[in-house]
Length: 526
Ligand code: SF4
Ligand code: FES
Image (cartoon, rainbow, N blue to C red; front, side, top):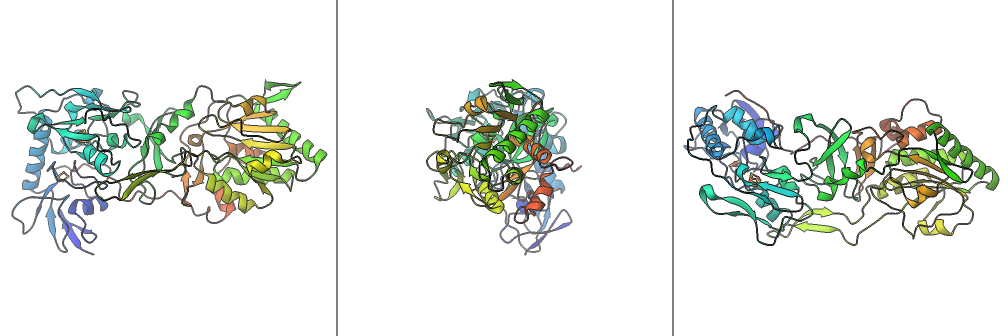
């Protein structure tokens, strides 16, 4: 393993690694714009130039491989003079609109100008003005702010493979643009917004909604398909404003789909269920959670007493956390030892959408056709619980079943005409109203995934934890809390303790450390 010295600090690098990536891995700050670990290396912005002992000129650290014993200086007078020159050049035409720019607070140009920039501009001529452009369904381009790093262009060529973006013109007239009639509308389009180190590419959905320094960040998992993309939910005062990718080398790397980014909208749907209901004299009436739970419990016990073992069923949702499946299964089986378990509908859309790099033919990203996050996890926990299990088809034909606990939690209406449930008592726990909740004997407003803790298993068998970001709306309760109460357990629901109770492989699931992600900005006084 090569060892290099950077600014007097000894760093263990990997074979054939570039100096910059070795520094990033070691947490040593070297400024960079055009370099991104997930893209090809053009070495065009030139801010990462460093001095290497034995080489007479500055070299781009992003494109120069390490050699054992290499001595690198990124803070020497020569390297610093280059950093300042690059900053001065980039700021010549850059507008001073940080107060109204969405990127302010997470902008490389802003951050580096504090460290490497000049306090005053020597440029006296008029700044070049470039037009704003609507480049796609979700993306706006403020060309004035662009620093021509070409990360966005390389992404559309190398990862999404659609190549909608290109560099038009030369010199100070260079601009990013879309090819005529080919807007940036691929399903990974918003990754270019994350890649843009300045505020040139903007997410229309997030535009002017929040200052980024007000946002809190919670690690989570995408709820829109079985891919298990790792994400951060960015929220403030109980409202989610955006979804950003969380690096995971084994799952989604640096990228997420646009559907994942917009998944948070279901959480703030105006039609969310907020009031527990129970049927009184043939009509649904509003009630308290305590009374709704007491009614649900009493009704299921009555059905079991009247119809015996094997008369109850539980329809688990593939949106549920594994821990919730475990607890609900335990509860229903505590009433009816022969209760039947069923996995609810698993919507799919034909084939997986596969993205490839046209130059290499290699797969770069996959959007799964299975549009729920935890069908695999629910199947695994049903097996762990043991006992009778049916398919949806078998459930619809069963004459023995007289009462069921049905969980929804899907991000849109999931009750189709094909869904046939046995006649009898129905307790429905859901986040959005459906035909089923409209006619249920008891309705329990539930929490969306962003409002609770738990774990999901993706299509590849990877079990991943998501954490609570915001509180559920008034009147809704986290499923885990409800099941704890029904099982007579004291205290609040604690996902980790339930995972330990479930044993391996759940007991040891943790949130992975971010390896290979872009480093957080660190300031060094030069
Ligand atoms: S729009 Fe952003 S990502 Fe694209 S070249 Fe300009 S600065 Fe780079
Ligand atoms: S980061 Fe090395 S030249 Fe741009």
